[in-house]
Length: 261
Length: 323
Image (cartoon, rainbow over all chains, first blue to last red; front, side):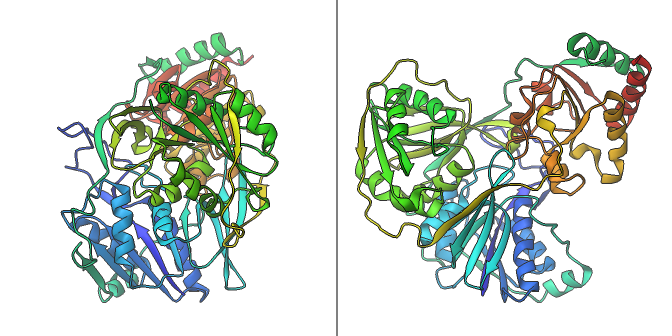
């Protein structure tokens, strides 16, 4: 069984973000980038299936600028077998549908039985590229997976996270697309041996032309208009002073406001 | 004037509250046009009547044994032909696990993206302006989508109030084209996530810990504060994902929703999925080293500082204050 994991190169979520001059996204300067956290869990799930022999090949694919190749290198060092990098300045990477179409076109000649994506990207939180791809491929789909197993080698049993501590268990026929939630496993890290081995693994870089698309047909339907700090709400009363002084002030407030002391 | 479709989420017996909220939003956006609810499942007549009275001008029912339990594939296959026939301007779904599951499958049929997690929507000249959150709630993000019909969005809980006036909508059963809707995807069961018996939902005092604690062996400093207060220990998703505490400690949209008299957030940034689970707390104290952390927007009192200095000092002060 051939499998695919979709990965995105995103700013580290612990970064201090500043809004860019156009006011429409974050300033990319001075940010460190990493593999989207959700995607690390998706990759690990495929590597686990490969460990058991259920999956023979794990391919990692990213859509993004030249720097996004580092996300693929991380995947290869962690255990993915090869990489596909869709890279074209004309690609409107800010539009999740354009990204899904590019992925769809890039894998047209492959025959993946199982495609995993992260539930969402940590930067735009769009929560849809996996589902859009499933729609384009006309394959069954489930999102927010926290459990995944093969039943009789022919069906996929998925546990989906719902609200209020509930899970839905469902079966999908294969091929299928699944978007995974964080926490579903413990992602492994690249070993030194893995990093050395990754240097021999192949990464294919594809332009829009290579995958039979052009910028005109892929024009973005979504554009980012503005990014702004969220309203502060009522705003907290901020305390300052030494830890001891603040502790004393907190005890007073907790006693007055909650009566629990 | 616009035609707005609303996917009704329900529990099998009643539409969920978010459905009525979205119908309220849809009536404003329709501006005199039609609001049509899409109701999918089995034994739908009682629910269809509720929707027809509370915000829908028309209710389209999609009824089949294969649709009794939700799966994205069966729902998308049932809805897609009808959606194309309706030629609506906008389709709204709830931003819930099933809403964000289904929305992109439908969007792919209409060759466009989904505006996800919207708190505000405006329509103008065939385009939609959608206000949502990005970077885990650190920013409000406004996007514009055009060139697809219907535009498709998922709407956050609490984004709108339900319809005020009553409607007297009609109900229409949609004939389903496919007989084997569940051929590729079958519901097995709904079950509770594993639990060790912790009942955070009823706890009067909760001390909650986030990624800021840094490592599992450092949790003790927060545990001591919880002990001093007689509090239960809660956690953000980052802490339970990392396995530092079991899943049952997780507070938020996918974990437990809590409403204690006192909620003490230590090293929690306040991502949206955490905040929805604790915002009905009586009194919220937040300690975080990042002055811009969104948690300070929902806290009553905040301290910018190192939790490893602040929490032990607070533990000591509480022990001294206790009779």
